[in-house]
Amino acid sequence: MSVPNSTNSNKRNLGMSRKGEKGYFYFLLLLAILLMNMNCGCVQKEKLPLIEAVKKNDAKAILALLDSGAKVNEREKKTGRSPLIYAVVSNRIVIAELLLEEVLIRN
Image: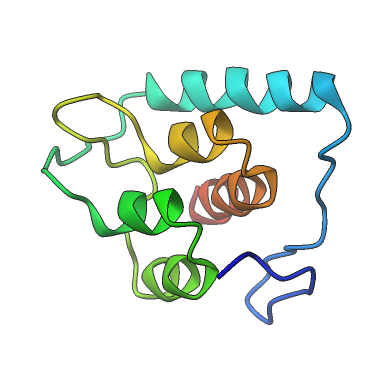
């Protein structure tokens, strides 16, 4: 399921996509890399549900996981990638924005 262009009731705006702006993509990538390198107290596991949902572009699962308190900054043990990195490198800009908003809301 792809991400809808509507506003979620939980402070998340899914309709802010700027797919055509190359500079915005690189900004998100840089921000994702910076967040990945923060000391986030990440638990490194294999097959993290949030990362799997991002890889599958499953908006319902992503929102459900975030609502249940999934850790946005968790990274895969093998690659060191976070859900945000996967979203940005897969050009899933709306999902990347959603994950960035979640980081800002929680901090």
